[in-house]
Length: 397
Image (cartoon, helix red, strand yellow):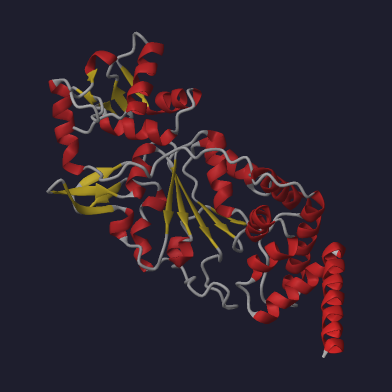
């Protein structure tokens, strides 16, 4: 059996001390206690995967008397199991996972600002109802972060699955792996989310292939048969599925998201609602940028105002068909981070828009120089200085 590390042992002992008459505990009780103690959800989760399970979501409480250090100096405490617990572990071990880190309660991000559909998403997550959602929107507007931070605020477990064209049933449901010289079935993140009653975030869902059809039953909230083992997994209370994408599953004719494919209509129909996430308003975006200024310990409120005005102007022009590219909220945050390093407004912007083609890049920089009079004045001073040097050189010749 795996060993408990120092943090896990301490968390378990603290829980036992706080509940002297308890012989077992539920998953949610431990997560709540861990949060009160300032311990991460992943630490609590990996600890519970090690302990013997005595029921659905219920674990045996191993007290300090059962946790003993190994003789070597570098060894960690090991849990001694009772015969019944050993039998349970042996049975469960027939279908076990090679990793338990996918399910966790996200940490709250101080830079996050609640806006848009956040309140609606929170209501759905708090309801613990199975209610699949599809969230669509352009890149860098906070779709994924909204889901993550809603889970953090609601103290809900969360599993994020990143979709690529190669993602298949083995990646999602699970497959056989070689572990300690033995072939075992490793449950995938979808099964782990179902068993934990967690929020399953399927990120960039429009990047997948028709292999995602393996999730049809999952999107109906029904038990799933693991074909490779014959085990039937029922979704625990609270399990829900949320998909995020840059498109609404119909592809992208504009060519901005060339890897986004057309999603099968039967698959899309299983999502109860679709939320179309826009970019934030100027006032909300200003709060976000100010929070990132605080995060990177820089102070320039004037720069914040000009960045927001610049980003909003570019997006309006994009919607009117004047430009083919866009500056996202995420890119504005990247500019703030770059500014914290170089302490140069124009350099920070230049470095962060260099990814665009030359014409777009020049247009973006020109627009910012018009918005920021200080930068414009600096450019004029540099030009005058260059002319002076050139004239002096010509005179000397």
